[in-house]
Every structure is written in structure tokens, then in C-alpha cells.
Length: 149
Image (cartoon, rainbow, N blue to C red; front, side, top):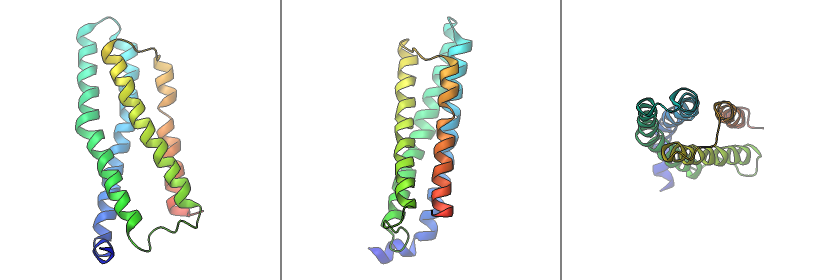
């Protein structure tokens, strides 16, 4: 099995990078849609419906598959011999940041349901602030992998 993972390493790494880029694009864009939804839709049910459609399609058709692919290819990389040395600090900082990013993904799903059900309590400003979280986590992940501190 390990020989198989080693032989597929370049492909696994390439697909992992592509799925991370796709997932990150959604993590950056969905909170921005929430900002516009909260600030612009207001009581306009037709505009709210447009935002709800955009949000659900982004989450279900793009972000969720990219999330699953990121985890699948990432775990394949973890189990590829010689790639990760858990005695170093960098895999732990990356793992913690990836878990936080995964929590944020699910948090966005919960906020989408709140917006859909009319139970949202978040303001546009709060969504803007939360929109910075994936950037901070991305910095930790990239520095962990590239610098390997």
C-alpha cells in the first residue's frame, strides 16, 4: 500500500492543491455573500431568494466537494511514507489550522441555515470580520508547510 501511495505522490499533491484552492475560494466568498445578503436583501424577499440560491449552490456544489477532496487527498499525503514527520512542530500547527478551517466551513453552513430560516443574528460587519479568519488560517498553514518551523 505504501509503494502505491509513493507512486501516486505527485498526483495526490496536485489534486490536494487544486481542491484546497477551490475550497479556499468558497471560504473567502461565502461570508462576503452573507454580508451582501444581510445588508442589501433586507425585507426584499426576491433579492433574499437570489442570495439564498447563490449561497446554497456555492456551499453544496463547490465548497462541500472541495472540502471532502481536500481532506481525502490530504490524508493520503499524511499516510505517504516520508512526507510528514510528526516529531516536528509544523505538522501539528498545520493540523490545528486545518481543523479550525474545517470548523469555519461548518460554521458557514450553520449561518446559511440561519439566513434561510430567518433566524440570523449576525450583522454585515460581523460577517466581514469573520471573513478574515480563513486568511489567518491560510497564513499559518502555508508557513507551516513551506517554512516547516
